[in-house]
Image (cartoon, rainbow, N blue to C red; front, side):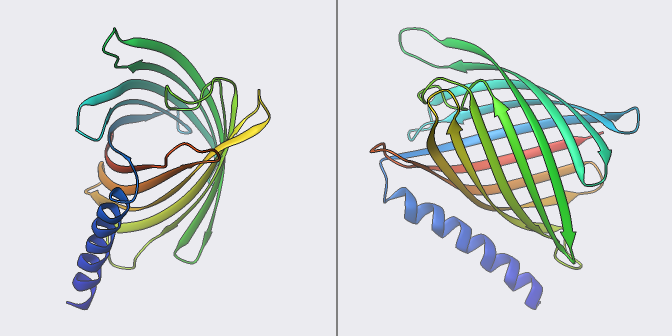
Length: 214
């Protein structure tokens, strides 16, 4: 009973945080992401990731489709390469871009806590109105495995550095949780604050995720 109350409290705090920060800024978005992945040749995995991003009024802002190939030679080390087709919805006509990303991720388990550091190199940021150029994106993530519970709360912090202009452009702070259903299904919910190192307004994002791993 006590564990159930803790889960309910966590969800309430997350939702209240989203509603609170939504009132503090001018921009709010909802991102919905699906992921379908398949392991092959023992250490490889291929994923397709469609995603839709909505604006404040829940009109479609962007939609995209990723193909991701990952290689995990060791339990703590993973390499990934991704190709993205990104479409930005405009009144005068949609704009489509083709983008690449390369990741290196290391992780370490400390008791029931898992810490991971991912470095990403891209020829884009991940929103059409950001400055063009090549980007370096380090991200630190902490995830906790609750004993006897399938819910895994997490938090992360990510920086965006424009390598072309040699400037840090923005930062992201995430808090949320994932939950497994059986061996192949996983859903997730998170709140994301995207803050710029300029006079641009911060963006508050509610993220919803679903993953099917076969």
